[in-house]
Length: 170
Image: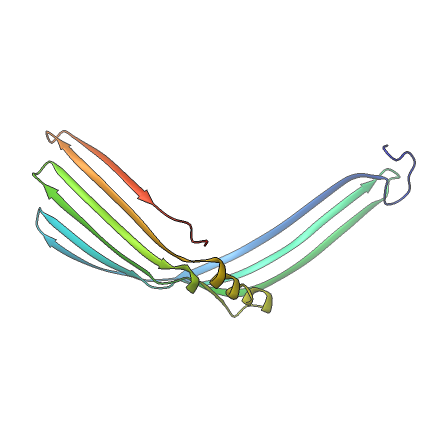
């Protein structure tokens, strides 16, 4: 009653608003690798991950309802939808591990991805325009991890690791 006996639309009692996006997503990709091993001493591996082709079908909308002090109500329902594809970039990776004195294992790996190659396809013009933004907002990333494992008398293994996953945003 901030406005006393004010008339529509200032006599709002309650507003409920629901914005939603429902997505159906399916996709396919491949990952190929090569492992070279010197038994019980050294392992070196390389991987290539193909782009992921994602098919996306979305239904989105806004539903709203408002109630007023005078007993009136108003409903709003707007819905849209669309389908498009998303193609992720190639990912190149490599790693290695080495065994030292049968007690200690050291390992590390890295993956490089050029996120500027992320792309929308077969979409409406608004979504397709995002491809230009992707090229200016994103950059490539190098994710890397290192770790060690210590074997204590074949009874207990202690492991420790560290990883860096930088943001794909510039």
